Image (cartoon, rainbow, N blue to C red; front, side, top):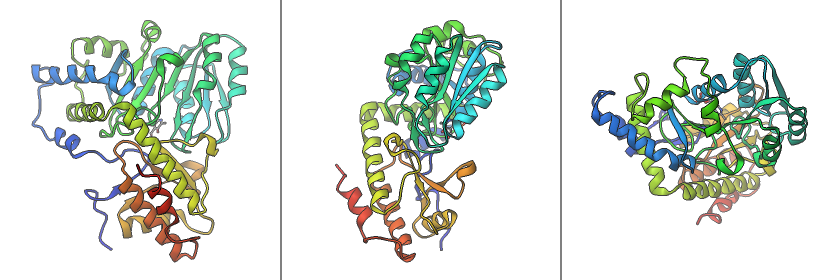
Amino acid sequence: MTPLDPETATFLIAGPVRIHPRVLRAMSTPSLNHRGEYFHGIVQEIRELLPVLFGTPGRQVVLSGSGTSGLEAVYSSLLRRGERTIAVTNGNFGERTDAICRRYCDTVTTVSAPWGAPLPVEKIREELEKGDVRALCVVYNETSVGLRNDLAQIVPAVKKAGALFLVDGISAVAGIPCPLQEWGVDALVAGSQKGLAAPAGLAMVHLSERAVGELRPATFYLDLAEHLKSLEKNDTPWTPAVPLFLALREALLLLKEEGLETRLARTHDLAVATRAAVAALGLTLFPDPAHASDTVTAVNNPPGLDDAAVRKALADRYDVLLQGGQGALKGKIFRIGHMGIASWADLLVTFAGLERILARAGRLPTPGVALTAIGTRMP
Ligand code: PLP
C-alpha cells in the first residue's frame, strides 16, 4: 500500500473540504502589512463579496478563528444573564451550542430530540409560548448526524415570541439555502472550511440590524462591535490571519463565478445521488431520511463490518477519505461530505471503492448498483 497522498486523495470528510488550487495559491504570498494599503484592498474586496456567501447584503464580519469563534462571538454578545435562552439539540453541535450558551447565560432551557431525529418543532413552540425568551439558538445543518433542521417550521413561533433567532450555519452556508431575510435570522455563523471550500480557521457572521443594535460584547477578541467598526474602514481590530484572508477572497471569487444558486443546486444533486447510491448498496441513512442533509450524508455502518476498517480500506486502496461518527456514534455511522467543490468524480471513486469492499465481504447485492445510481443522476 502506498501512503495516502493528500495532494491527490479524494477528500470527502464533513469539513474541512478539498480546496481549489487557486485558493491554495492565493495563500503563498510573502508577508503583507496588515495595516497597509494592499491588505486594506483585500479586506474591501472580501467585504464586497460577503453578500455572495450569505445570499444577501447586511452587516457581516470575518473573524480569525474557526467556526466556533463565530458562535462564541454571537452568543457572548447577544445573550444576557437572567434572560431566558432556548438552545436546541439533536446532535453533537446542538450540544456544543448549548454548552457555549451556558457560559454566557444562566437561564438556558435546552429543548432536545434524540441525535438524528427531526427538529422538535412542537417542544420549541411550547417553550417559546411560555414567553420571556430573549434568544433561540439552533444548528441549521447538524453535521454530526447528517441532518437538516427544518427551521422554516419554527420561524412563525420565533417571530411571534420576539426572540432573537441565532443560527449555527457552519455546514449550511453555501451548501443549502439560507433565506435569512425571509426567516428573520438575527445572526448566522458560517465556517470557512465547509460549503465555501476555503481553509479552516475563519468564521463569517451575518447580523441583522436588530442584533447589531443589541450587541453587548462579553469577550475582547470576539467583540463583534469592534469588528464591524474596523471593517467599515476595511480593517480588522487585531492582526488577522492574513494568508487565510487571501484564501477567503479567492474562495469568494470562485463562489461568485459559479454563482451561489448554482453551487446550492450542484450540492443538492450530489446529495441526491449519494443517497441513491447508499440505498442501492442496501445501506441506510442514520438521520430521518426526510430531513437528510445536502452537505453531509451520514450512513449507518453495514452490520458486521467494522467502520474504521472500511474507511481504512477506502483510504489505503483507493485514496478516498471519509469520516466516522462523533461521540456515541463512533463506530456506528460513517459520513460523506459532498459540499464545496466536491465533484461527480469524487462520488464515483468513493462508491466504486465501497462496492469493492462490500463485494469482498460478500455483501454487495449487485455489482455496479451504486455506480448506476450515481451515473443515472449525473447531468
Ligand atoms: N457547528 C457545526 C454545525 C459544525 O459542523 C462545526 C464543525 O464541523 C462546528 C459547529 C464547529 O466548527 P469549528 O470546528 O470550525 O470551530
